[in-house]
Length: 146
Image (cartoon, rainbow, N blue to C red; front, side):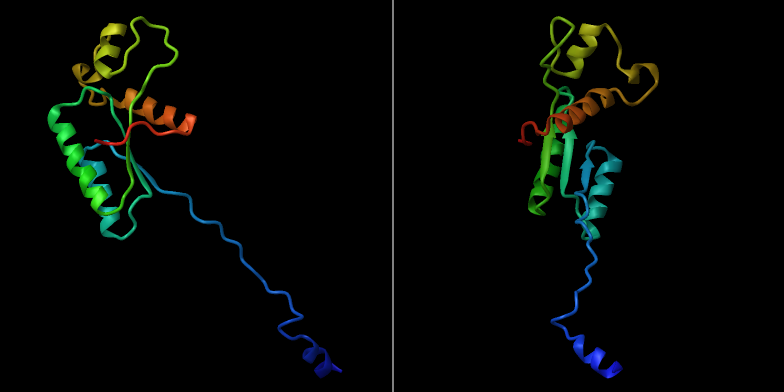
């Protein structure tokens, strides 16, 4: 009787067990164009696990050398098939007049000083972060890198 029961369990009559594993979420690198984020980007690529997207928040008033370096790194990422987007804050609703489109205009409109003048080193962090959060909230990306 036991042998008969076993013979009844063929591959066709048995249910197959599955372990459902969802795909991992995309890896997005917030690239500040600095030493640390560049090192992380290069290391991820060297390990064979490049990010799915690299995004930079442009405050609008970087030095020309910074934009030149950004273009060089964009070409480096393009050669490796790494998607790269640059986003920039564009005011839609504003409480200050005139509206500001970059960090310098923000400082002048609000009569404030960048934090670097007070001994800190995150003068563009707020506007860059605001740009990234705005893009994330609205589900869009800004202009692509030159």
